[in-house]
Image 1 (cartoon, rainbow, N blue to C red):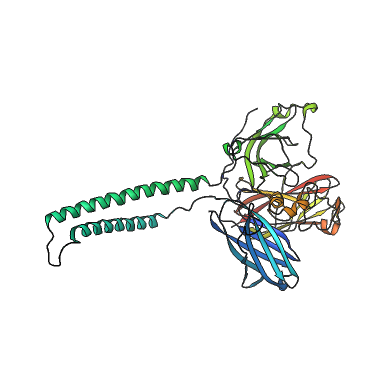
Image 2 (cartoon, rainbow, N blue to C red):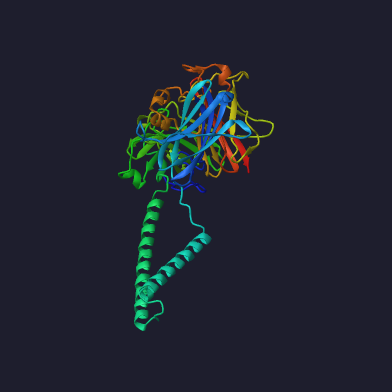
Length: 502
């Protein structure tokens, strides 16, 4: 079995938890108020994060909105700065905005507090702060600063020479040859001293710059392979990054009860998709039975959450060949996770007249959102589910959510795992807000929009007929969106293709 270790062309970093989409979206409740929060993290750290808070329920009763960043390891008392007020945006009575400093890399939660006549409430939004680069100095500015520095050095050398040469002269006394010589010597010494200081200062700055650049976030290096050596086709992901294998290793925490959520996408046609959950076989290797997908090339994206709440996505490309799928020995097969699912087919193409995608049980997934999608425009990806008779479908919770979705730009430069609560990691939330643990553990039902009406094992049709995901596309281009729901114990997926314009 050959192994493909190709880095997906066009990938660029945004936030650690997703690929190519740096903004964080949250939709939920802050006590008695419904809120939709967008966090735009900075590319450099320290840096200013832009926070937008839209009060979707009870905006007319809101008196004050505040935000503050809290690091994952902040002390319970006095470990975080005081909250900053979010100011109303003129012309939009529901919208508030603020800017917050994120001073270090790591996992944060942004506390959004809303006060008004209904009372007070707080929502916590997990945010992964990473440094994506270093701001380079513009060449023109560098040239101006270099010229000014040279003038300062020249002035200091001239002052040193004049001080030695003329400081002891009487008012009418002429400069003697000896004094001129001492003046030149003083200028030479001053120049040598200043240039040595400049050299060591530059060396110090280079060392600081190297240290800062070493903190630029890089995804974990991994090697993926599909092999039949285990007695059945297996997808194996091994983390080969020295930072993981060395002292920087840290334990993972479950997200929806899983240590890794992996998405497998067939390229280049986007005609195959799987959402599976590899399990660790050692400290650096994860393995999962290969889903029912054909041979070909696949991109794999694996979401993991560290015990600090830091979330990131590992990325690789694997080539699946026929011989890997030919070996079947049921006695050595890993048990299948009941939440694993796969899909293959042709995505429905979004059009102005609306579009529907079939589900495997005869149900239908209908696109309800905007047909004209634009870059950086906040939107809600909305869908309704109808059973084979055309009635609102009754859905079951799927890993604690009414629905899951994944989307990718066709070239792989963007990948996002979406929930009705937005792009936040529920695993990060359970770490950063411990009181949420009971709502985000395995088998629990997250208290997010569209899930409050969930009963054990089912949801009433009025709520189950519609699922929504807040998002804004970061780049123009062609995207494929997969939406997953659960009915009668089966995980079903529908796919759509959409074009995003500038």
